[in-house]
Length: 291
Image 1 (cartoon, helix red, strand yellow):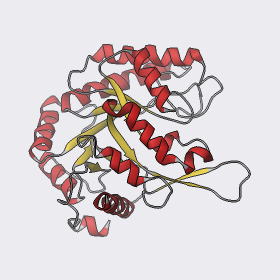
Image 2 (cartoon, helix red, strand yellow):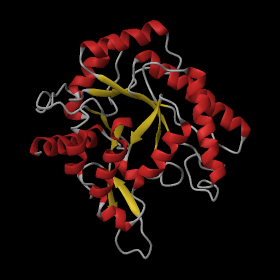
Image 3 (tube, rainbow, N blue to C red):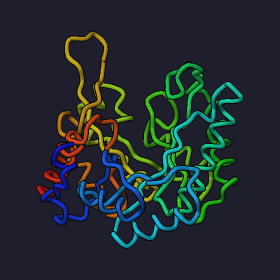
């Protein structure tokens, strides 16, 4: 964390309007210190700074500081499995989703995000033979409606992030869910990497990204920034997630499309160190400057 922990301000801090964000590795106390930390990382977007048990007064203070410092609170994660075959797990997940959506609405976050879940009892985000059945699709629709109707958000959206293992796994699958769920407060969380499920898509991922924005653009509330490589020397396709800039994802197209929606944040995730996030941010900012 050397550069960031010493208060290093990245040179790109004020050079463009891209709403880039990522996890914070430096601890903070209170809204003002949180905002300074976000700015020290060169970010203008951030993950939700408070947890589900936060007091309303604290929530409002963070919201006010975010507005004051022009920081978008991008998303509240509701990571859980509301379609689990285990009734207890599903009930706990439903409660987490409703509480997370309520927090997102109170703090003015762009969205609350989860995946649809899985029928896999061992892995809440893993594959299962029934994940792509019509019964599972219908359950996702019903569960999502119940989450939204329970909270009735007025300032935020409940979103599902694509996964290779379950609906929505493609732009058209998203459109089908949007139509079926039929709620104004349901929207899209875009992570193109999670829709790369074959070498054909991998090598033409720019086409996938363009399709996503063409079909889903107005529904997109937040994006994830990752990268992907296709492993060599295997007889069946194997993908590995890497930091932005080390893989084959077409960030020129990604950022060109994202520029059409300037208030949609781009959030890095899944890296291990502050240095990796700084390197990923430098790469993204450089592509943004080039285009």
